[in-house]
Image (cartoon, rainbow, N blue to C red; front, side, top):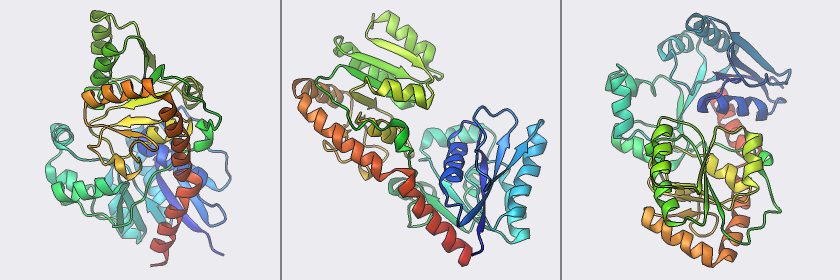
Length: 354
């Protein structure tokens, strides 16, 4: 059987959401069916993928030149190109069309007003932004909420079929998790206002007997440190950026993941913590009810007031938290890449045979 040659247009040794998606796809696509072509970056910090069926082009210094060569190399060799990044789109679309290659893209963010302002401030026009999602055979959203929101607000058309992202459950899996009392709460993500970090600090003021850990870095770090000092929040600790291995170790001690972000695409961190038996508390504004069943495998609350009420209840009834912890592990297993990858393979095969 002839293998389908797939180009994954991301730097699989560099940390970035789209790069990491390409990396896990390269690791999980069935090599009996697919030959995989992808890119590496000369300054990447991750190990090279050890698989003879994964062919990598190293984008050398200077990257502003080598990226053009790398993308052309991948498109030239492939039957189907997956191009999730917004990098040199016109160049890629030109070669896809000229060489008659099949292509698809994923939309992974909700383009709310603040994000549009950020895009426009970089010098791009609104039409430039919308053109990022045209010129491909298929464009998929990674959640149903995201698909509907971007269509309604920006006219971005994507497939009815959702291509969910997965998680490597085995990295975080802790099926022996026992929660006897609520004591340690963690946040994992960028330290920025849109992620709700100041909501967490307000909650920490209310519950000085609980420990709050903030894992990540970002532009609000100095402001957070100043707030902690000003309010004598001795129960809040900044951990900085953690590797997956370090995070897995920390999660063994955590009881709850507090993630009050105001805008997300599909926060995979809620699956990683779920695999560790640490359920998430999230806001409903980006469609989390698609994968979180409130009070069953996680918690969906409206605001800081409801977070405080929930924590008070979980302190008084830790048996509820233990039950939700077990269900959270089951949630993570449903989204394991070993399962999710089958849907990606089906769509690639359908596109190739059309």
